[in-house]
Length: 278
Image 1 (cartoon, rainbow, N blue to C red):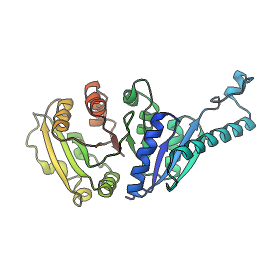
Image 2: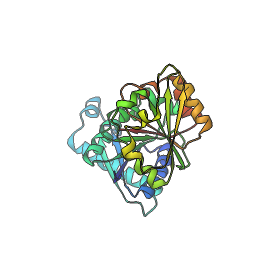
Image 3: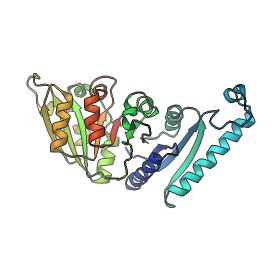
Image 4: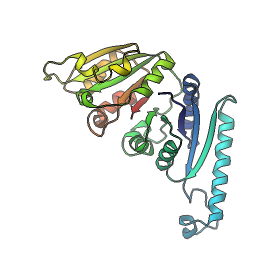
């Protein structure tokens, strides 16, 4: 799959600037157009004399004025942040960030969304109900989430985390493959297996992915641990990576990422961008 369109939400924070820098470097490598998206609510910039009624139900002319105001703000932000050569376009739309980003991703048939995190708790918010977390769940495409204050683009080594639940999961690895091939990164597959698992065979896990991965250089690592956190910790200690990829599932490995210990190890301590494949 060619990643033709990369969507980046903009909230005008310092984190947004870091996200833009990361997106530009990635887009240049994968030769993708960047679609910058700014969302706003109807009452995000009320007039001094606005009443509660007009804030909740603005007149059509006020909506047009807000649209123009936020579009100019986005254009100014990008002019001060983007290199001139970047292939991009900017879209401003009313609504919550998650609603707007996911809708535009579907309209534009985007293959990837890149989101940053800006809150008092950093990436913690990503996993407990923030707009970024909502985007990951509702997005029609894969999502790459950056830890707060990600300032350096590096993609020499990428990890793909699998577990027994993935054996029957027909996950889409085409986005991951495109990134691996374009960046010439090394791919490390890690399988966290219960100690009680009987007759585990590497090929049983890999058979679902051979078609898409047979042309990609990769290594396979198995950690027999009942505790997912411990397995991931051992893998990261022995195999430092620049990006962790997982296959999105409502249950299984993705669900276990909500455990505080694993979340801390994977995101906070290592500051690793997370690619959620859909």
